[in-house]
Amino acid sequence: MSAVYHMVHYRRFTADAKALKGRTLEALCREALNTQTAGAALWARPEDRVFDTADADRRKIFLNKVADLSDAVFGEMCLAQDRDLQALLSMQPSVVKLSNLTTATVYDLGEREAPTGSQFIRGLAYWLAIGDHVFFVKTHSMTPELVRLYIDWLLKTRGAVVDPETTIIFNAEIDKAKAAGDIGEIRSLRVSGKAAPQMVVSVPAEEREVSTSRRIADKFVQMQKAVPVVEALFGKAKTESLVESLGPKEYLAVDASVKVRGSRTAESRAKMQGLANDLADASDAKVQIEGADGRIVDGDAILRTRMPFHQPHEGSNLLEFDNVADQLQEVYSRFVKDGKIEA
Image 1 (cartoon, rainbow, N blue to C red):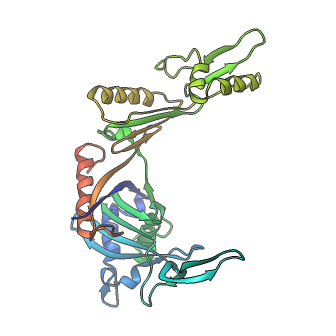
Image 2 (image 1 turned 180 degrees about the horizontal axis):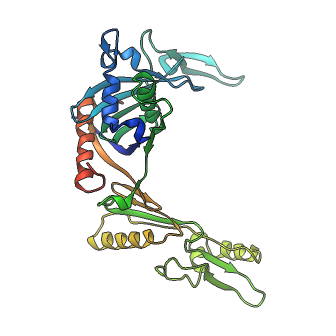
Image 3 (image 1 turned 120 degrees about the vertical axis):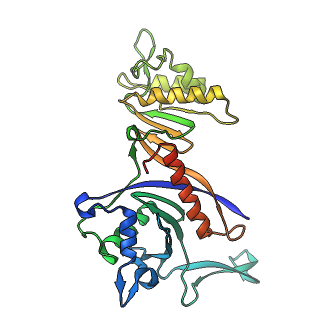
């Protein structure tokens, strides 16, 4: 069985509580898909599940396969574009004159429209709504915002299960303080902003003094000599030229970025986790911590994880519908078990 890895993204659905009337996103999607027209529910009307984005590219989103899993709603979105053309290379060679000096044998490159009654697909999204949690996998030109726009249209316009004035938000960030777990093994961390450790280079007439701009919560050792660090990056000659060019109010600032690559040891994992915790305490700096199951930016966790998915055949752009449903539910269960989200 051929498999491919994709990133599973997490979002938290929020909207005006009064408009929701106690209903979750899962319940709202199910209710919208149960709406009847001419005796048929929306599940059975694919032509009515097409959302026109009305943008300059004239894109449309087809909610193709969609299923009630009893404890979740799962669907497949297909992104298409009006008057779309696909470039094709005809493998029949021909001799053409390309310039006054060049006559070459080439293949014919042209464009074709999709056959009548079909559409070229420019992106896919497989999404799962369980409670107010949303998990999705996207490919090619599909974006998280397009997924949100479709759900917004489904609930407000097509299904009319919430007030059209309701603001629907898919939060990418959650308050890490509300989650009992973390984002898994820390792989990299980055600090930037005014409070980050900075190399300050001033050039008085009588001597050169190198120091840091400030400490972050006393957790960083001050860099007493910035020049050797700059020399390591740019070389001695370029560093000297750069220092000579600085004005009296200028200084060099470097964002701190640390990554550990290769085979990890228990000691290095523990040390990186400790550094990440120290950085998270530095409220003045912009802190980004990358982990195995997401990232934290300024104290907010953005959850995601890579998972394997079955393909119909090797090299396919499609994923097997049932397998994606199983894998997204597995991610949900894992995040709940690890305390990253609440059931």
